[in-house]
Image (cartoon, rainbow, N blue to C red; front, side):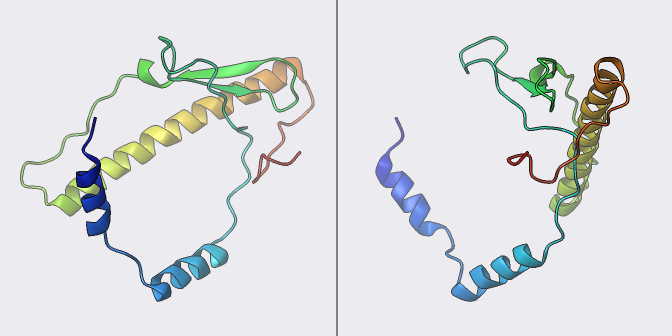
Length: 137
């Protein structure tokens, strides 16, 4: 069990944003463009953390027909991109971030393709709904 005094000391050492920084972040968030609509609905984690398939993400059909697409995160092969030994920390961060963004884009394309195939086969003539906020129907 971690020492709570060490945790308190760590939390106390973290920088505290100023009121101006908080307000600037709020303004930036309010001025940010809205997210692009997506046909990918929110995922469900169908298995408990103790289960062997705990890393499965299930994307159900937006029309609630019972179909779902599953992505098993831990089943994907993971390889780090080559990083030169002479790379600066900023360069390492850029390389790793680009690699993560590319993997995320591949995953998004795979999920969208599965949803489009499903709609073509089971809901012919109907487009998958695209929403910016999936909490509302």
